[in-house]
Image 1 (cartoon, helix red, strand yellow):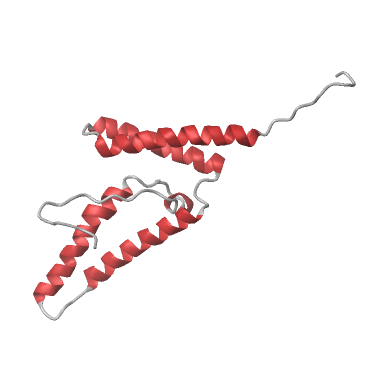
Image 2: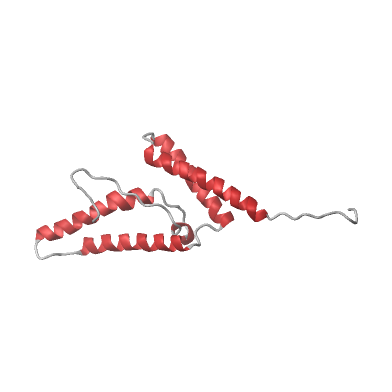
Length: 147
């Protein structure tokens, strides 16, 4: 190296940020396929690709250690706790008990199960606790609105 050579150092964090941004775009495309496609094979392929992307991002970019992940973990736990309490509820009469149990089943079938398909899977506690997405399947005859 010449005595007057200029040594230029690059910040590899910029490359990581660009890669993470590209992976996030691909992840969103997979999510779109899962929510709009009617083909089981397309959904399966998108789900597998989504899981692989999330695993890679967790390992290399420390995705899953942020505040939103803790929030999602609390929401999941709250949904599970609500369903369990509704299942254990015994009202003054059989009709109120039946309504509570039916609402618990509705939450499990329309929110918990469809959303769980979008969450990271794995055996370790770490992979199960990472942020995912929530969705609710519309049910005919129920008109939901927010005041």
